[in-house]
Length: 323
Ligand code: UDP
Ligand code: MG
Image (cartoon, rainbow, N blue to C red; front, side, top):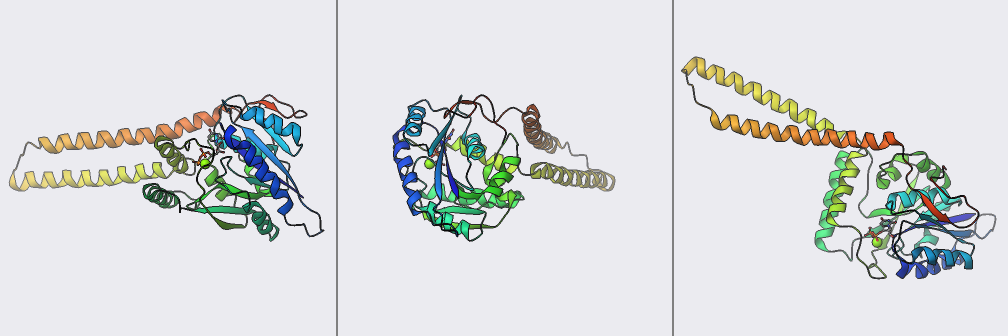
């Protein structure tokens, strides 16, 4: 049995060596297979357009140890693309995805493999939010509640990309070639038996800030809703219908009032309020439609998810390698 550990890396020179050591050390702890074989391990490092020494560290590690493999992108394509590349390069019978910054404890890998042996296709590591600030925790909670209400797939709070996937789960993920990838949703969409293990949230190692700014989080949240269904468009239909009913009712009321009492109020305020209100509503949903059209535009172009600039010798480079 071969286990692949996929690690997307963007400017991680300060922790990369420690991470690779920690992951390679796990090989000895991996539980034996039923035939008594000891599982082997490979590390697939994906350099997502780092501007520091990340790539040369990868190259050096590969030269020292064949178990370390690497792919380097031509520029920064984002973590989703890096994970996709890692999954398509991984040769293992099971694949673990983890972050480079040691926030995902490598010692959990052995437990994950043990659970995988029990027949689970996905072993999801869920972090407890011990070390997080109150505000951040509350925001995540709200986000997951909202997303789960809107989206057809269910996404769990704290369950991130740190997980083990069986070969068939990986192959299923690789079949989904959409350009806008929202992994949390994709993981849930493919189904298969899954189990969760909890771990404590470790502080980020190797200095540096988390790359998640508020704007990025908001965009990510929007992605989560938009890439999994057309609920926002539905909302437009419902809101439009409700406004129409209210509008008609009001017109009927006004006509009756005029006939019965002969009142002819100027109605200036009502008019302005209606124009502004409906103008805003129309612009908002024009934006929603535009967002979907934009997504279609990106999908239709069928651009590769990433471009490879360098890999370990023996693997062809240049362009997206189809799984
Ligand atoms: N990452 C990446 N490409 C990017 C941003 C991040 O490959 O454009 C990697 C990064 O090196 C790390 C993982 O994705 O291994 C998670 O990044 P980070 O720690 O910044 O995110 P957080 O832990 O705050 O979710
Ligand atoms: Mg991190």
